Length: 216
Image (tube, rainbow, N blue to C red; front, side, top):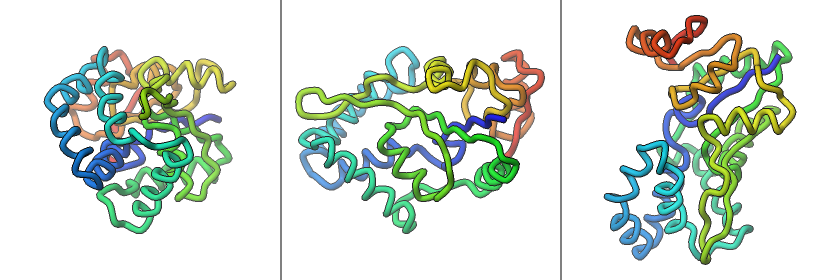
């Protein structure tokens, strides 16, 4: 069976891309000033699905301008090492890792589908030392920096799974956000990893009567 996991807020207790970009911005006064200057415009754009890719790309470009592809990958790997050492603010959710391990023991195929850049997500997932397939956001070079190419979110996550040979339906889906509603609707056993009555009501309003809310 196939178990599909979101990453940020589901397996991780925060936003990996935001943390990585902020760490990079702080390393350079010029990058930091530029990031702070565009934040009032970029953050509202990131909050809206229709402009999320553009807003995120603005911040991504500022934090990566001047990097070659190899340097970009090296930056992600360096960030993953600090993550593993516990020297940045991100961490794996213990309950999420237990569920992931249960699926691994059951022989299920595990796929992480995330809006985070593939190079960043790969570096972080490699610290788990588990056989996990990854589908993420591709990046492309623009004017000396990097921006989102194909943004792996919402319906695009389902498209990425189909293109990877996983079909249009899966046994399990885990996410912290109803932005992943297409992912949840395609699952036999959808789970939103926010417990409580409010999360259950959101699932019912979305028509996911076979879903459950789990407190991770």
